[in-house]
Length: 172
Image (cartoon, rainbow, N blue to C red; front, side, top):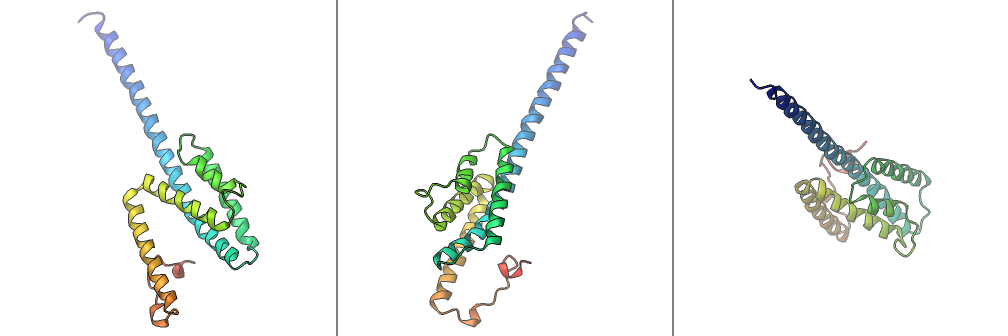
């Protein structure tokens, strides 16, 4: 055995260890980013639901509900705090703009901001889990078409039997 063999083995071991540590850090950073984006996605879905009621109030020219407005504000700041944890997201700028921008030309109504949140949710969903996002979009579009038909028919009582576990009537 040569004198340099243990040195080469030691150097190779250190390189392998540092390479493993680097790969683990990269892996953890990607998973952390994805987990945070998923949490942001879920909060955006909740915000989207709350903002829908803002569009209804605006449509009927009613004053917005102060409790709902407070929830929207708190949720917006929670989303902002989560985005702050990750720098490399392509979605951060769009999300923060739609949540905090007071640009009246870009968002003249609650409906325009609601639509912008919906577009962000669609693109973020496609980024996180394209198959799930596509299926849920298809179900949502079908439900919207059925709701439109019910509305045109005057909401007959026999058609309003909601037993879907994910339907809002089952939320507590």
